[in-house]
Each structure stands twice: as C-alpha cells, then as structure tokens.
Image (cartoon, rainbow over all chains, first blue to last red):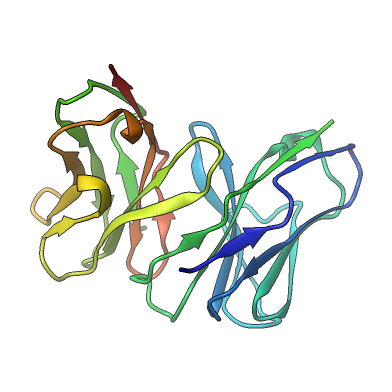
Length: 114
Length: 110
C-alpha cells in the first residue's frame, strides 16, 4: 500500500511565524503535491513537484514556498503565517507523467494561525 | 479550461436507499476521471477511476460510476446506502492537469 505521511496532524501557530509542513511518501513516486482544503472550495493546488529540486506553482501559490531535496520528501513552507492561511493542508503523490494516474493522499495537517 | 463540477454540495438519503452523486466535466479531450471519498479528519481515498476503458467503472464499497460522453457526466451511484457511506465525496479529473470539484457531503439517515 502507498503511504503518504504528514508528520504534523494539528498545529497552532502565531501570525508571522514561519511554518514547515513535512510530507514523506514511500512509493518512489515522481510527483508530489500540496493542496489546501477549505469548506465549499474543495481542494486547491498550492504547489507541485515532478522531480527532485523541481517545483511548479499551482493555483494559489501566494504566501507559500516548497522544498524537495529528496524524492520521498516534499515540504510546504509558510514564510510568515497569516490568519487567512488557517486551513487543512493535504499532501499527495503520484507516479508517472499521465493525469490518469491515481493520486494518493496523506491524512492532512490542520493548521490554525492565531 | 478543463474542470469538473459537482452539482450538489449536500445529499441526504435514508439507509438502504440508492445514492446518486453528480459530477459533470468539461474537457475538449477524453479526460481521466476519479471519485475520491474523505471521511472526517482523514485524507482522500480513491473510490474508482475512469481512464477510457469501460464506460461503467466499479469501485470499492459497492460504488460505481458511468462515463457518459454525450452528457459530459461521471455520476457516482450505489444501490443501497450504508451508514458508513456518510462522508464527503470529490470528483476529479482532467486531461493534462487534474482538478477537483468542490465536494458533496453525503448524509445517511438511519
């Protein structure tokens, strides 16, 4: 079974803090993704990566950055957290280059910024 | 632009009755289409996927979906709802870029 592990399930951070959300996958997948999930808005893609050290902006990259130094690990960074970044963050991975490949999700990280 | 649209934000059914969750897609090409389920405080789990093979796709837990090109639809169905089906369901798909619908919350009434 593919396993996507998000190390922090629940975090509370203060406005202006730097926040790191870590994600590890164990299936040697090329592609990794960070989504944000908000009620009524579904999943919105923040950033994705199709190879080590490669990254691409998704639909809502503002206020976020990412790092992929190793194939299995994809980190989401909030340089200066703001209250409007309070949300559920989902990491995911998939193999290959075709959009027909299944995306596997972690269990999510609930971030509250106060 | 390629996108999927879930037509209902909430669906409520009685236990033992059929489930229908609706999804339409827009794409100039035959897309890959997926249904995922999310239980509370969990990530998304794949229910089923269509990738231009058979138009009727069977998934886990008794769910199935039919790809109808003429209607640009990929509705999710189940003959008989179970309490454990209560969750949020997401349709997703695309040709080169995968997008997700806004989700449908399924309530199952005992």
